[in-house]
Length: 129
Image 1: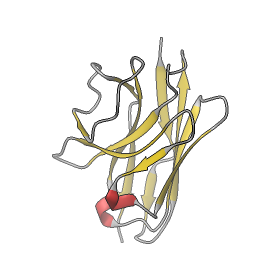
Image 2 (image 1 turned 180 degrees about the vertical axis):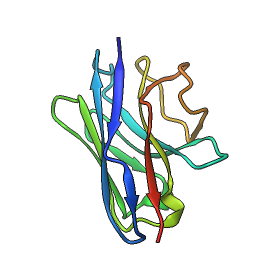
Image 3 (image 1 turned 30 degrees about the vertical axis):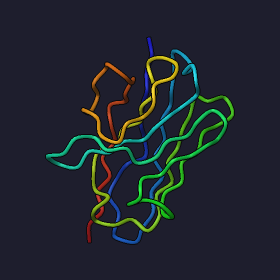
């Protein structure tokens, strides 16, 4: 079956950097889109960044200029480079791919709901001094 697995989370001080990655196995998304969502305590998942098969990227306003999403040529690994991290970036980060062609990434989602996306198990990112 389809599996997504995040890696690379951890703890960092404000101003620091982390890179998290998502390995996708079992299939290749019909449209090659991959997204990163994050969930802060008590919140829904919110879209952080996405990348399409043509390399088109989207970034939520809070991370513009600080985060960079990328995908390898085989479309089975997606990464999120996070620089200038802030305490507000503390969250569990999930990667997600659409379950069928044509689904767009909405800004707010119920984390790990299977109705629209396949999800990874999440990786914790903690930014604290």
